[in-house]
Image 1 (cartoon, rainbow, N blue to C red):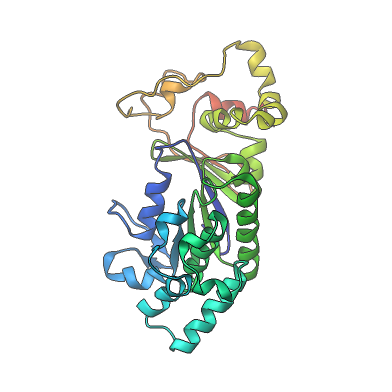
Image 2: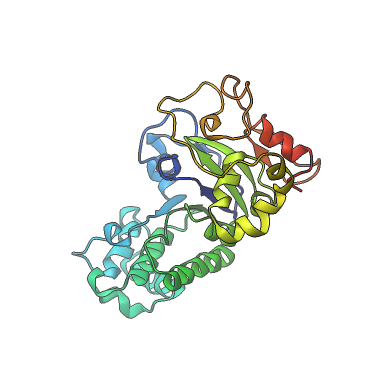
Length: 302
């Protein structure tokens, strides 16, 4: 991720999106290295990294202590990190409430007095109290109705522009991610299978799994995906469906068991991320050396 970027992470339930987010936050153990602002994530630096990375979770009710008032909840991060005097902390709570679209009077209220959207605004405010450089937003609008979700998305955009903070937006809603994000990574069974700009992912999907996800969105299917594959569909009259997931992880492409464009080498050869973007353009990475990548490179996706 780049500083100040809104980065989308999409994929079906169980693919590892939330697990990755929790690893970045240092909430669960993992193998490998995570570098945040030049620092390697480990338990010794957890307090230091907590000021750089904060989270907004899916369920605001489960994120807020119902026994405490909003002002206490928002002041707590500052108290834990011993930042500011009591008066300075109260002033920052008031300023943050205004920033997330509430007013200072909310600090005397309890959680159960707020609507779902107001609770999520408080959660966003709590996450911003330490002035982090990165926010992990894990399905932050999936539990809300459409109008409230739109308000929260607009709030994220406004905060991104005003504060210049980076945002990792985890979601299964591709329309939301396309609207909000600069770049998108598509995850399948614990792997990033495609990564590129939002426009590239939607207008020129290069991995068969990405195309399958987009086909599940009626307007995307009609306007982009089906048109780009029209020539292939004429030659291969096969219905679009997702076969049963294989139980064991295959040594080759993890999507091969569900891919209608696989060939003999897909199930056995290791698939690495390759850049298919023209020289000088923003990288467009895809983990497919089979028929999907051949179709793209042959110009059919364009």
